[in-house]
Length: 334
Image 1 (cartoon, rainbow, N blue to C red):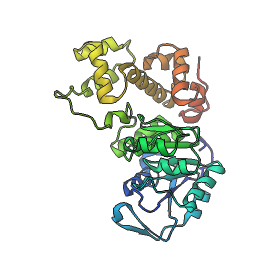
Image 2 (tube, helix red, strand yellow):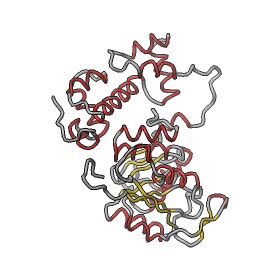
Image 3 (cartoon, rainbow, N blue to C red):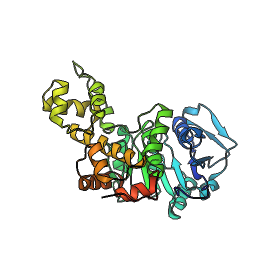
Image 4 (cartoon, one colour):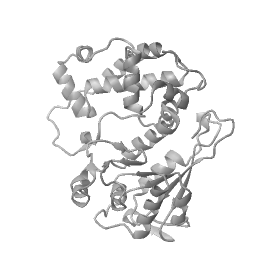
């Protein structure tokens, strides 16, 4: 959506397909993320509006907890800018052709298509994922590979962003993906504000590998929380993995194992991710000097900032500022 426009843009329209057996939690995630007013954000426009749609007049939800009625039909997807397909438990049972056709025609006209949890099965059945990366819940990974061998499944991540098609690994990972969409559409600062309202981390490090069922260790590792908080307050300093290990009073190898076990990532990857996130916030808040952003975020040089920001967001610092910066008309200073 355009930023800094003299006219308020229309809301970005989100349609959510509610099929038989759909997980009501994931429908709730979509409506919570995109359907509720957010006056606390101070935006001069309504960012999203949500429409639920069903293939039949009455749709029983997962385990028949309740039946959804009085919802628009699948024609509602024809006005959507983003289509969300939640998961359901009977993934070996093909979706109806009516549902698959709604997904295909939405994608064919250029709208964004998003799946939550096992909704990835529906996107694969519709042919949207052949030759592309995707993810789904780890418990269904083997089944998915068997049914859809042409899809490049990434079972260890929380979500996959392929541009026009995005997939989330599980029900709670739908929140991760939803906040990523807020970040992609409106920038890190707005996404962080939404995450605070949801009392949910704006960015969870690691992937769903950390949630895969495995034997509980005899002695649980100490929480990394205090160490992470300490490091986040010192991102602009020449902080290294060795410094983190000294602070935690463990060897670098032990620290690496704890990060892998608790966060599903490495200390260095976490540190770089936090520094890029800080750089994004500084640009959004109006800092125009690249060397200052690089120094304050701990990325060192403007060249490293450019490389890291492009790798994480797909945008150069100047493009990021034009899209999300408070003073979008001002150029970044090399």
